[in-house]
Amino acid sequence: MLNLPLRNNTNHKFEVIQILERFMKNNKYIQIALFLLMALMTISVQAQKAAPAKKSVNTKFKIKGRIEGLKDTVLYLGNYYGKSLYYNDTTRVDANGNFEFYGKNPDQIGKYAIIMPGPKYFDIIVDQENIVLQANADNDINKIVIKESENNKMFFDYIRYINTKRLSREPIDKILNDSLKTEEEKAPAKESLNKLNDEVIAYQKKIITDHPNLLFAKLLKMSLDPETPTAPDSLDEVGKARYQYYWFREHYWDNVDFSSPGMIRDQTIHRLIERYITQTLPQIPDTLCIESKKLIDRVSGNTDLFKYFVNYITYTAETSKIMCMDRLFVYMVDNYYNTGKVDWMDEAKMKQIKESADEKRNCMCGEIAQDIILPDATGQKWTSMKNAAGKYTLLVIWESTCGHCKKEVPKLLDVYHKWKDKGLVVYAVGNELENDKWVKFIDENKLDWINVSDTPEIMKQDSASKLIYSGITTLKSLNYRTTWDVNSTPKVFLMDKDMKIIAKQLSAEQIDDLLQKLEDGKEINLQNVKEHEYEDEDAPTGAPSKSTNMKPRQNPPPKK
Image 1: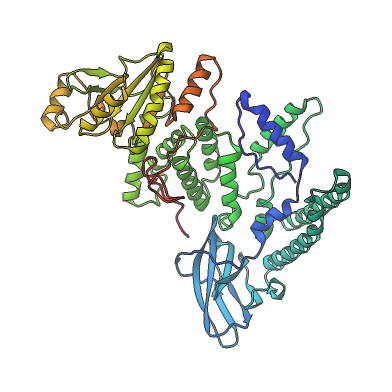
Image 2 (image 1 turned 60 degrees about the horizontal axis):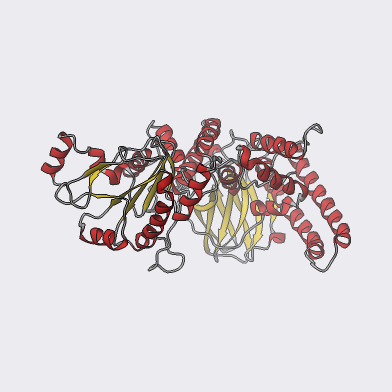
């Protein structure tokens, strides 16, 4: 089994060698993936936040049993939905510790949890069968007895097996982590680790092979990566790693039964979609758009997976700090929200997310920049950004009262002076309506680039209409805050000679580096470049910045 979390994969030639080197390194150290798997299967006793859910539906199946040490109290049934656990049902424990829940309909199967006061809980597999068990109030796994339920007998046998193997691994880890031991001295421990790994893999395979239709076996299979084949001997080391990477990417979802409604009610599905979108696929918007559609098409027949994947990808794209990822966000909105395929969101939230996409679509990387035509500090000389464009054009939207702008604008001025003779034009827009402080800052800092701004006078209804109809400016120019998605300052965009947006939300240092690469004719890789974030000087550590990204309008997946 290949434990393969590829973190910065790319299909661009200038990155592939580094990615493949990491791939080969991961291949060398096939650590005991079974212990990572414990995140899926280990019984947890920690509290988790939960939300109320609809009352359980009455079916012919029952979930019942006795909990020793518990009496005359409330017992909850929780269901997983992606990475979270939500309250699903409630019952009473009688004076003898007995309890009973109704079972679940076929579309509600999956991993659930019985939640005791504390709270303490243990997981169970809920399928179309009765579950009869005995447990203890101290939540000791060794005291849980499954009297009826094929899924849970196998599930708890598996947990106990894994716990035993984990204990066997502890002395091996101690040797391998001993910095004083030589590689030769660690060799026997590595051999023991490999043997242990092989034993667990064989045990897992036997469960999956012998019980292909059992829900627990499907959940177990979903938690395992497909086994990547050995690359052809005719390939060199880079070629072999490339072969394995693309095979793994193509077969990433092979172990997931997309037809089963139980897959969504397990934490593994969230880890899989998260790793696939943020680590396995290259962080290139166009690639992510294509691969996201392929994946969503595959789960179109599974309502819950469709909802979860659409929500996750949209939310991740909108909140991503990786440059130009808003293209994926707009793509998701256009293909799923604007088409009516998303029908679970209320009208107000739907309106917000569509508006958010509309605000971003005009200023995405790769798009031809919308023109801005605004006057200078005198209010008399109007300048078109497109008419003033150079070999490179830098749009800077800033405010003289913004603390981050005060620090960044002088740095941007240095970059401008360094590159203006090589074709850099800076079109700087003052974002404040009262221009006195803006003019003062320009004079004091000798900002000798193009400085423009709107004023209260030109934004009056009559004045704006007259300016637009006379051809002096345009509606999009006067509405540049919407056209260019200005929800904070500073906002920075770099365009090429054709006014195509190359990059956005850059720091002065990033701009300087990017211009140098462009001048040197090097390929530009933005997939690992994060949009520049400014720390809020007045905010406590860990608080969100007031001057950069606003709170995203998208919401996490719907609760179940």
